[in-house]
Length: 395
Length: 213
Image (cartoon, rainbow over all chains, first blue to last red; front, side, top):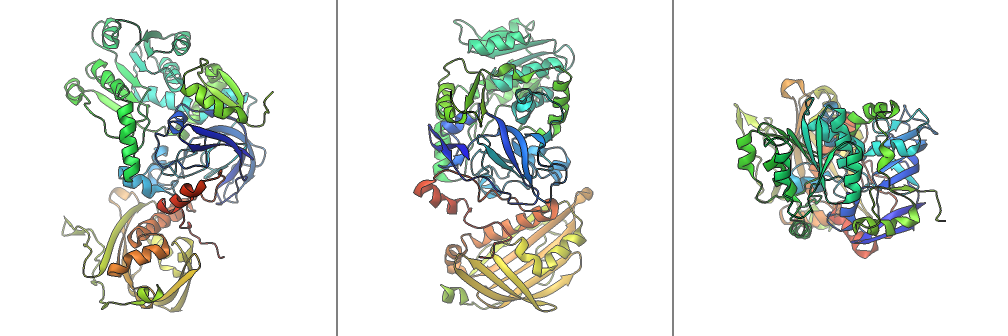
């Protein structure tokens, strides 16, 4: 089959690789009909994530048709249409039982690598380094899905792929960010970062009753999408603009009730010396990014909530914890507990409350993917979201 | 290498009374430290299953190849003894093992009694506080001293890490009915460095059950 492979920093190739096979009884093989490039894939592209190796198949946002199931999968059959969550969860450990799916104990075969870096291991992810499990990803024509009786969401309606594809990651991630923000009716919510996750956090904040949403970014195309959702936008690159002043001006001086950091700092660290130095270097290059966390802590009102869907991976410097304590704020964060949100959010899509496909700017083939990684990384062509049809051939 | 592995320092029995336990009279006990030619490892897991069924799975030595790395066969030779065969690449080592203590649903202790491995261990099963499953604690001892690195070269894992991984596999099998595996999966050309890193990541050690090859 064809697959998008990471071959080194800033080096991505579409290659012919072997088809996946069933390895465990609870596996399924999915013929992928649509897949997407995630903003977090750009950090793999830039080489910030340790334990990526040449040849790794990328991609964690995908959906398709069930091709084959193992003998332990009773709820799916060949021909079923499914969206696959990016986190892999067993459904039976303490954490899965508590609906903390992204903390699953039993899905990461390389948990020891995570334990060396962080002292614990969360669930495995598709196509996101060997530390996160070493599973082949979904920017390909087929994928093997472990614990297929727990993760995949069956789509029984005739909604087009593009309307349900983002249930694989970014819509639930944005929604959980809004839920973690503990929004009460009428609240003012500030969202840093208007990429796909920020977009769905804004839309979800309105769904959960926000009275006003303030969207902060620098890219005009993203800010325009945010305004279309009804948000007030603040472009932090405008001359003489202070985000903190803007947020005070827009809240009568008290600050937003909730702040959502949808930017994060998507670097992971490993105990391996080389990997650790690599992460340290990445942190040094990304000093503006912990800036969002600092700013959000400074901005949020007394007793307010800070929700962090953006990924942090290491040790943060100069976080104003005194302000956080003094104001008595609540912080909630973490990888998305996908399996908890997919079905309720599908219901919202089916009810016509949201059409997540509005963020798509580019539709491409697998062969075009390597080039489009570069285009998106370099913030060209007004990319907001790239969707791949793995069976299309370039015109 | 087989000669090195057969070198056998003076063996002694494990303490008789629940030495894998982490508590005595309400006080926490740290794990034993390495020394005198012995490596110790103590590890624990909270497992969502009852103590009796976990005890039964562990005690069924013939099922060990389904969750212990590189164990290809275990044959009972008497009610309390068994013969173990471990395979790594083209090399095979074998030893006999004897159960020293066996309290149904609570505790199993064992030691090797000859062959290519000199180890002893104990596992205890305790109800977790609040009815949140079973705490399984393993204490294992390897008498190998400086030959640990030779062992590591042979099996591809530090023996301590192997005990930790085996308990992880045991938990996954008990909770999820299978042990997670990502290899072999589709991938492009890994090049020389990528292939070498398989060993660094522990991916050269096959997830059980080992394929008979």
